[in-house]
Image (cartoon, rainbow, N blue to C red; front, side):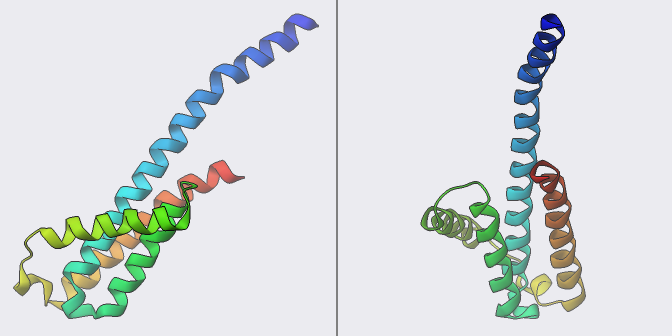
Length: 124
């Protein structure tokens, strides 16, 4: 009986790091998706307006908070993301076309939702 309990305990010990790695990969995917969403909204702010960019920034801030860091640290991380995005040159003509902008912003938002669903598995 003790050997069965020890075997169960050992299997849990070895399974925990694998679960932690999967959660870490899912969180990294979510953070990358939020960066792409913020980037798409920033690029298309001329066509979609500032409110779409503001919503994307708030979504990125919420994703950064999921890591467990304090709010001020999460806000600084998003500010660094914005600086990286602002430093890249953008194609102004493409950024003013409404349909591609709507498609890009919605696709990246769907990507965020897909990664969030993967993370929610660990919360249950």
